[in-house]
Length: 375
Image 1 (cartoon, helix red, strand yellow):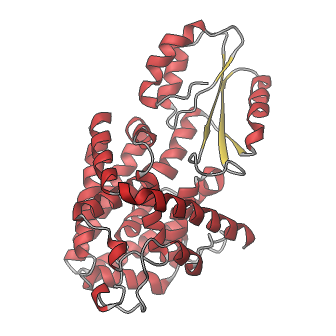
Image 2 (image 1 turned 135 degrees about the horizontal axis):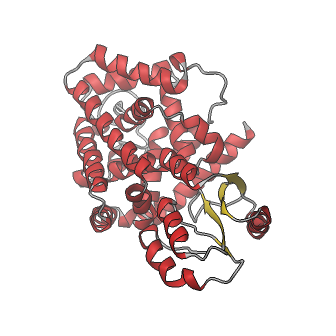
């Protein structure tokens, strides 16, 4: 099995692939499969079987029940059965795809999700503050944003770079996310109530059904009581729309979530299809957070009102727009070195938070997954 970064897969397979034994089964564990497929077809002998794989979760998540993609690209069914047997101790859920299907699904479930959290981190680092230490982002779905952002930046940069840069579908989605973020922010600045409301209601209806009432799908259970247990900051005593300085949490526009659902709608992505097929834990949480906001008329209207008329988060929203556009541009250049530099500079700002945040984040994911099973 080739467990190397997608950036280097062609070079490594070129060196070792030609000497592969006759009848051997070769696999790759890269997060983006287009370069892997090209390398295998170019450098592996014709008498070698190709049955690839990819576990759709991070190293700190238990593989039990998580999706494990298997790709029988070249070879008999017996080769696939053998790979299944070898991987069975992981107790993961097998999902069978082609190379192309894998890259489309991972782009839909991971690339733009990662871009959202990368942008959050860059925005907060740009402001040189940990907002959860000052009464912001300390309760409910805000807790998910903060903990997952830390989780991503505590990992190695190359875990995300290959998927973003080498997957053509990912590049398109990340660009649209930056566009959605920018266009929604412009509507906020213009205080265009009618325009913003129509755009977000249309996005909601496209993704979650008319008025967010698609009852065919079981909701992902998100309990604020559960989420509040995993906050990195201290929750203010009330929820009224005043500043943390006065002891109360201000309302949030949730720009990152508004842009995410708008992006899905404009690209025609149906996230629930991929949720059922091969969702990562982070993608499942991100859909759950978006669903929690958009399928409640009260919460969605509160976010729209805050976006238009409350400036408590306006400076952070501006930083978020800059960050989203910056990440999109960075990825469009196709430079791993530029991606690495941007990622590591932001990660350095949160370095002191990682130890506690990753422990809390892992516990949060586990608690939410368990509560969803019991629902």
